[in-house]
Picture 1 (cartoon, rainbow, N blue to C red):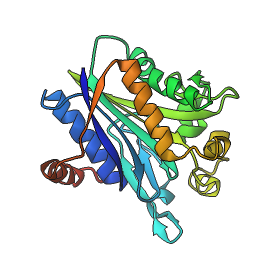
Picture 2: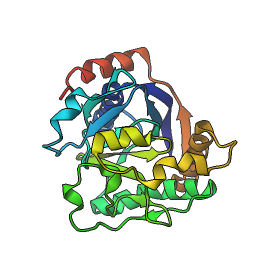
Picture 3: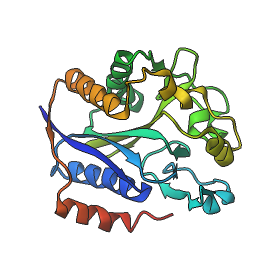
Length: 246
């Protein structure tokens, strides 16, 4: 099977969410192949889960280093995520009749294998009582999350399911500023936020992405066609992004 691999994109939260939504819509229509992409955020952003109805009013006026912190709505579930110094992955693939948690765990296997190759062993989390009331995604753990051996959450994922397709994307915390994290959530940052410092000195973002691409290729038994977004696709994405404001 051939999947599309979209080269890494750094862009605003509004654009990143629009790209994921557009890819999902096109796959749902049968007009686009399964896709994998990795991306980063051009400025600090808080993404709000699809069903999250409440968040602090102060988030609407937050700034960091004299720049406003963007606030965007995800099409997927879960709680708020601070995107700054993290790496995000996105997969759009055909859906099947299995339970949501089974699909999470099937997709997450390539992340477990990739991070194992980097020397970090991960396992699925266990939901704790009261986690649903915590506004911070990364200070809560569910069965769809991936945690380190000491219980710290490294990867939080969320899904949107359609009739034919599933979009799963998630954030891998690497070097998020701990002061910023506390400013946003009024909570101490999880240990995993400093994980990049624990990796070998020659391990950069490009290395992490390349290893995860290779493990995805092996695990899903697929070949990738690397293809950036075309001019027409960018036009569609920008048009869609105008409808995603909170």
